[in-house]
Length: 164
Image (cartoon, rainbow, N blue to C red; front, side, top):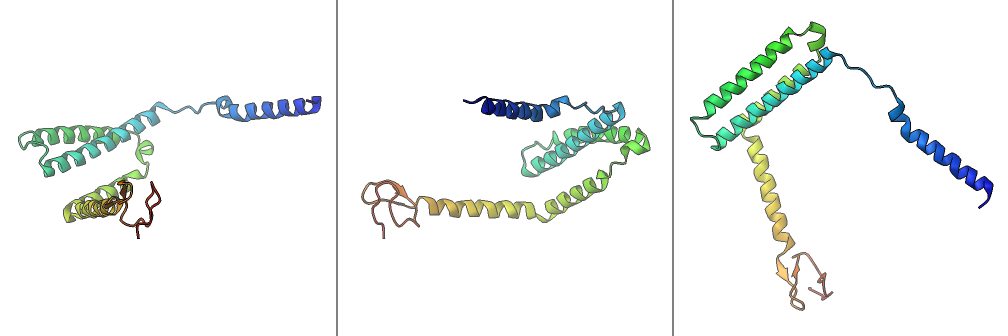
């Protein structure tokens, strides 16, 4: 190799290392304690809301015994109320994130789906579609080699026999 090509490869290598190391060289952004507490409270609020929705869904399906359901739900509601009180006690600038309206819209949409049964209709459609796909996948066997073939196949994938 010539010296110019070695220097060119070395220069490219240095540039690549410099480019890759840029994220590590940046100064980390400091997050205040208020922002950390707000973030953890919002995450806990979302987790509790999801747990409540899941608990209600499991109760509707009969997975949760009727005698355990009220205590579990009351416990989650109490914890959620504590989190909301903590969020209300934060300074007004910290708690105005703008996602409260979005959260209310999501909850309202989930409740309307639950009331109308659209969620279950969608699941039924997906299950029926999967069953139809399964029927089309392995419906016959090749009369030459005996391997499973699709109903729509014109030739055997394994031995190449004409199936028409």
